[in-house]
Image 1 (cartoon, rainbow, N blue to C red):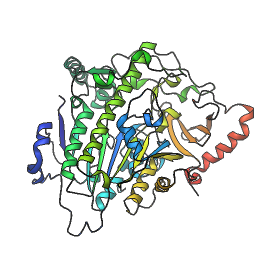
Image 2 (cartoon, rainbow, N blue to C red):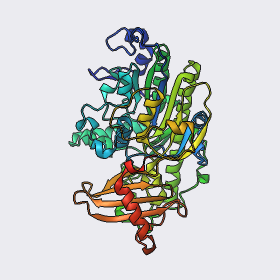
Image 3 (cartoon, rainbow, N blue to C red):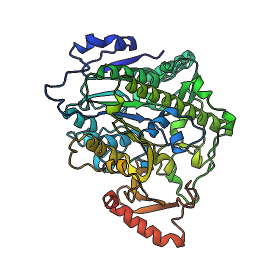
Image 4 (tube, rainbow, N blue to C red):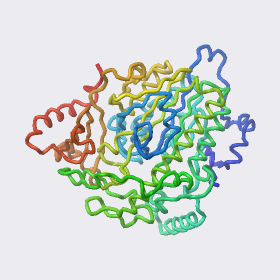
Length: 516
C-alpha cells in the first residue's frame, strides 16, 4: 500500500498514513492543530461549507456530458444535483497556469504565469487567493492532494501548516517501483536535477494492478479527505480543496476499473490527423507521452502516428482512470451525506485542462484546440433541494472565484477577471458571455504566442511573435459544420470578412465579451 505523508510547511516531519489516521486528538492538541475553534459569536449567520474538487487532465469524458462508453456514475449523480456547464474553458491548457488562474481569479497574462515552474506570488506577492479569502472570512481551510500545482504550494492560503500528499511513486507493482528507483538513482548519480528526474524519467504509461483503491494516489487522497471531513463536521464553516491526480499520465488504476471496458470495443478518435491548413507548430509534440519508458520512440504528430494497439491501450487506461477517480468522488460525496453535511455544502468539480486522446494525432494537452481547452465544470449548491440541469453558456474557470464569493455572501476582491456564474444557477438559459478565451505559446522559448477565442459558433486562433506582435498564422474552425476542428478556414478568400471581425473581437479581449 502506498505510504503518504503529512508534510509540515514549518519542518520536515513526515507522517505515515497510519499515523495520520490515528492522530485525532493528539494532533488537535498540538501546535500543528488541524482544527481550531471558531471565535465566539462567529456563527451568528450560518455560512455554507465549500468542497471544491480539482481533477487533473479530466476532459468532459463523462456520462453527464454525453460521453460513451465512459462509466462515471458518481460524477453523473453530482451532475443531477447541480448545474453542468457544458461549455466551460480553461485559461491555459497546462496545470499550473490553469489552477493559478482559477484560484486567484486572474488570467495568465495578468499573473505572468505561463508555465509549470512560476509561482503566481513571484509577480503578485500580496494577491488574495480563493481559499485565503475564505480563511480571512472565518472559514477553516484545508487542502488535500494536488490543489495548487503540486510543486508550487501556497501555505498562506490555508488554515493549517500541513497537507496530505502521497510521497512515493504512483506505480504499485514492486517490480516497476524497483526498476524506477534504480533508474532515478542512476540519473541523480549522473548529475541530473530532481526536476529532470521527475519530469522526464518515468516508468510505463499504464498499469492495471490488483489491490485496493488506496494502493495508489487517489485512493489515499480520498481516505485523507474522508478522515478530515469527520473532524470538520463540528468545525463549520469550512473550505476543503481536494486535488485528485488521475486521469493524468501515467494511467494507473486498479484492474477492476480496467475490466469495466473491453479494449477492442473502445472507440478511437475519428480524426487521427492534423487539421487541414493549420500551422505545424500549432500541434504539441508527444514529449509528455515519450517520457514513459514504453513510449520513448513515439513519433510526433507531424511525423507519424501510434499503432492501433498503442492507441487502444492508452484510451483504455484513460477511461479506467476516469472510472477510478469517479469512485473516489463518490466516496467523498457519500461521506458528506453520512455526516449530514451535504445540505449545507457547496460542491464544485472541475478539470484543470482537457487533453487529446489521439485527436489530430496528438496526446496530452498544450494546444489551443477544443480538446485541450474545454473542461468539465459542475456546481452543486447547498440546500436540501438541488435540481440538476445544464447550461450551454460560454463560461471560464476564472469565473469560479467570484461565483463562490457570491454563493457564500463574501465580498469579492477588486480586480477579479471572472464573472460570477450565480445568475446561471437561477436561469441556465439566460444570455451570457459572447466568447471564452484561452492561450498557449509554442516554439523555442515560446517564440509564438497563440491566443484562442471560442464563440458560440467559431474557434478563432491568432499566432503572433512573442515580442514584436507580428501575426504569423491564424486558424478558424466552424463548429456548426466542423465540430472536430479538422479544417482551418482562415486562409480561404470567402472567410476574409469573418476573420477580420473575429480578429477585432479577439483584440478587444475578454472585457468586451462580458454579459450585458
